[in-house]
Length: 226
Image (cartoon, rainbow, N blue to C red; front, side):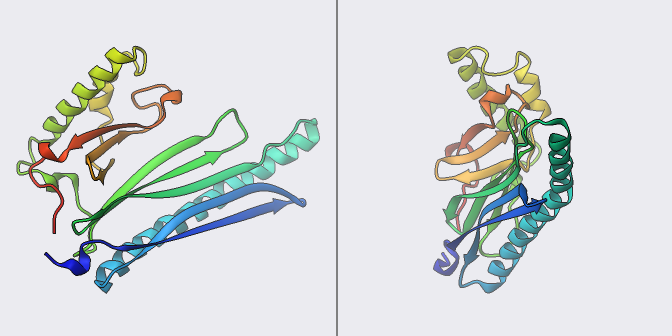
């Protein structure tokens, strides 16, 4: 085992920026992110580069799209005499696994555009600290032709149990929706297993939020290790 890349040092950071129009804050961006530091400088460089790219995309995308919308909404509020609710864009990273030469995290983007509630989109990445490359979900299984079926069986069993315990938690057609919206990239590691998640409205009402299912490491062929 290479102790130098067993885990990474996590350096957290937070930044808030306000965008103003007519002396009024119409949009606020809030980023809670991180960088890593390891003795493997090449892996460190690759992972940090990816993190920077994600955050730059978030800022550029939201300023380009949300700011003009916020300005338009603010102007309309002045013309029509109704209150203006400032827009907000939030990016929050959570490191869920950092051991056995693997770094896994998810990041939620939450946009608020003045309505009753905002929208959250989750994405995630899992990297090898030895190579700095992303680890695909298939890497944890021997048979890449059947692992998808095996994972779906586990998810459906858990979903059936939740639906029985809490009727109405999922949409009526949740079983077919689970299969339809299964995404091999929508996963991250935790100490307890591999988490597969579904976005808002994919398989359940908005109030349920992002739905997660855990595949225990005892049910995969290759748990994370150095």
